[in-house]
Image 1 (cartoon, rainbow, N blue to C red):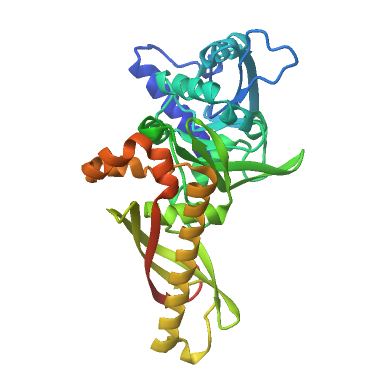
Image 2 (image 1 turned 120 degrees about the horizontal axis):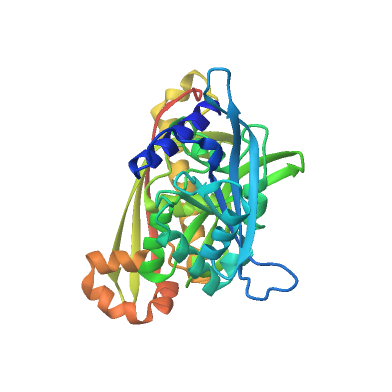
Length: 380
């Protein structure tokens, strides 16, 4: 934690110097947010207020050697009719000048996601803010964003530190690997108003919270259409081509065999047979994780071939189950298939784009999966 905090402090100082500041940077006069939450205003009398923003800022002191050290965190909350106005209000209430250039996480509350106009305004405000990095992680929550930004776990005092650590290289073998940033979200929304946002929650007691990244929020036409579970989100990830680090449990000869995904790829093609059809060809390579299956005969080619077939069947079931939810239940092209048609199948695009909502729901979808088991053993 101390090393990450020191890195942020150094980066802030460097940015200030590049902007033309001279002399020693007085960190006591600058507050930099590592987490930003945006919620729909929920006060009794809204007046002109539409948004509530919550900012998490580290509170620091100095070590005996003069280095900045983290002590705790400070939360700043403000309401306004615009996100920019709420940020200005939070800055006005602070004794420090709030800096957003090192903000790692943007959390969006459920009520905000469900309001089409306010969601669009919030994303537009974040995109236009010159301080905010377009590589900032964007996540959804079923509750309020303020609860996520204000939560503190035993491992990390702030979600803005937890999320980058979760997605770092050494953590990729644990939990869900799907992620998105502000730049990717804006691109997806501009392509057709549909997107998928990873879900973050904070569970536990008031004094002992734990962050959990699992599942996703589905955005259709700039508004929340529903949530996918962790497994359902993985069904989406297979089609997008990267499930590295995921662990899939396979029912094999009456036993549960966990298979860790070492790499995966996907190629999506389109055709027409009275209606639009989509085919996802997925290739996945995995290793048996945590235990060796079978006994000395576990390397038998026949047993390995059967396990590969079960692995492929499990992946295919996940892909088709998620496709059915996104097509039939939600009607949300989170895959960005319309954009793929525009880039690669112009004739099909011209034919189906004018009524894409119906075309996507009725589109035929098939998945072919080739799975390879490269070895067995324990996770390092």
